[in-house]
Amino acid sequence: MSPVGRPRAFDMEVVLEAAMLLFWEQGYEATSLAQLREATGLSSASLYGAFGSKEGLFEKAVEHYIAGPGSVTDVVADEAMSPREAVARLLHGSIDMQTDTSHPRGCLVALSGTVRAPGGGEAAARKVVAARRAADRTRIRACVVRGIVSGELHEDTDMDGVTSMIHGFLLGISTQVRDGTSARDLHAAADAVLANWDAQGR
Amino acid sequence: MSPVGRPRAFDMEVVLEAAMLLFWEQGYEATSLAQLREATGLSSASLYGAFGSKEGLFEKAVEHYIAGPGSVTDVVADEAMSPREAVARLLHGSIDMQTDTSHPRGCLVALSGTVRAPGGGEAAARKVVAARRAADRTRIRACVVRGIVSGELHEDTDMDGVTSMIHGFLLGISTQVRDGTSARDLHAAADAVLANWDAQGR
DNA sequence: TCAATATCGGATCGTTCAATCCGAAACTTG
DNA sequence: CAAGTTTCGGATTGAACGATCCGATATTGA
Image 1 (cartoon, each protein chain N blue to C red):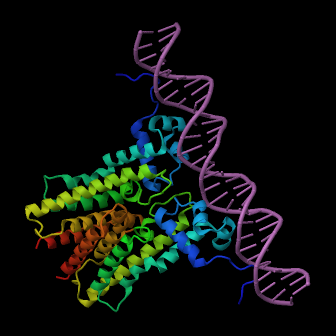
Image 2 (cartoon, protein in one colour):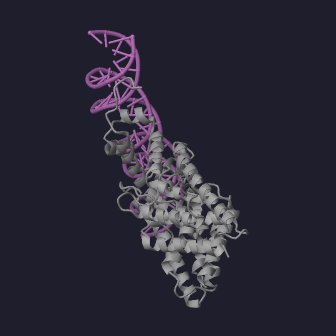
Image 3 (cartoon, protein in one colour):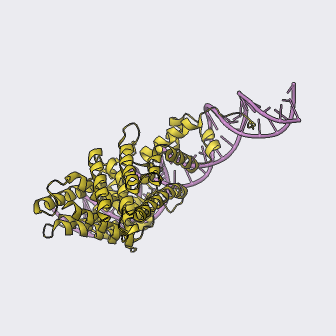
């Protein structure tokens, strides 16, 4: 099963990590191919040979992000813990990750592709992150439903309303972090959201 | 006081309105001068003569937005109403405005300048919207403080935490709206946030 | 009526963009 | 070893970018 032809001289993981960090810091549009070439050490030919286009590279970089730092949101789908604890870990974990100074602040998925350029060049890039946001939302909603079934939340709870509250706050974390809001304040805010969860149960 | 020289042939308000709509829809970077020229009907010379640069135009367009649709957040500073009602109007009013289909969805201030390009070309543009976000946050915090003083909120309430919760949700509305979340779900979410406000009072 | 001033439309500037082309190099397969 | 295949570095492409220049035009103040 060895591939025919000259083998790649670069490590795919290393390249994706570098591209991810660049897109994370600057967004899709503001990141130029020249910067990507410098950060990855690859030539245009290698980049296009491996990923096809700037969008293709972005897509792979987002997948790399989701499998890495972005995986913190996966806890919300873990049915081994109570819905409330799942949401708690989702929020506090996201805050910890997004305020970690060892990489760009905020969330690549939350910050990218929120505006649509009709020209379309960015359309596919938007699609990738929007799909992940939709997936997060779906999983949060499932968690809320679990909370109702388990009795943690009152049966009259507005499922989509609570989902939108949690997801909205989650999405808002990124902008706050970029603007300099401290991790302490955000953790306290997450606790306030969770207090709301408890209030809905009464 | 009449200005010397050939008078402007365009209506400043009309031009700013057109530019605002374009920046609102597409963001700062994705909006090109060619698009701005077409939307405003002005030549490059007129645009640069009046605003100095693309950034200068963006700055004026943001001010136009803040004085127009963006003014919905001003209610939170109105001390004539109770802090709870002020927050309620802030959230519900923002949702109404951002889901209004007579103009681009979401909030220009919340969606712009969340990523920083080191090249600096966008730096000043970022500054304008970031300043407005900071102002909103400050006013929300003042409202929370008023709530504590008035007794609506418990005196042990974590001011910055509640502020971050409200502001975070407010910022998250834009992305949700762009992704297609309904006004109904967002209003229900706002009610959930307000239920939290009540819970903090006990 | 004439100099000074500011804006106009339109052409154009140099730069940067994403993307492609090309010949050399490195590997597998027969 | 030779044929086939893929990737490599580096030069280069046409298009689009923001910004500027220019001659013409319209106004004010003397």
